[in-house]
Image 1 (cartoon, rainbow, N blue to C red):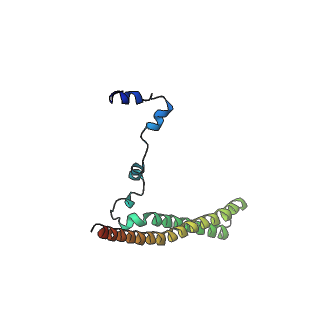
Image 2 (spheres, rainbow, N blue to C red; image 1 turned 120 degrees about the horizontal axis):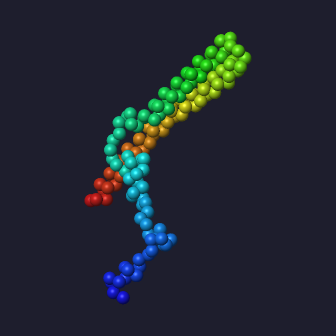
Image 3 (cartoon, rainbow, N blue to C red; image 1 turned 180 degrees about the vertical axis):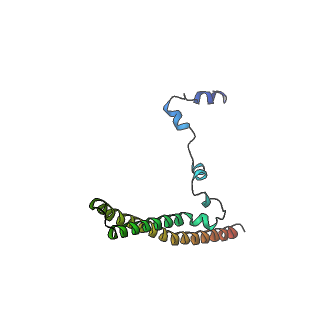
Length: 137
């Protein structure tokens, strides 16, 4: 058997189950390129808006829903409406109120978590640069 004949002997039919194993799979490097956390791999700095955008949106929507719940609850107890609509307002008002409060608190808690992650990331970058400085000598 010559070297040129060897690859022809190793060829696998495309319809066979073994050929599926030979297809190129996504490796860790190709997954990292398409991942959403691309900033972990690239040292680009992000603006404050890019960092705090999601918590700000969550807090804004939560505040709006909370305010809507307060208004509906106040209307339910101050207006003289029919029994059916009064009952609906008394049920939906507190539901919007609690949903808005939950979203507002989630956004408020998210901000310190992001700040802590930013500090940890800065420390890890510092220690990596310090390590590479001493190891490259």
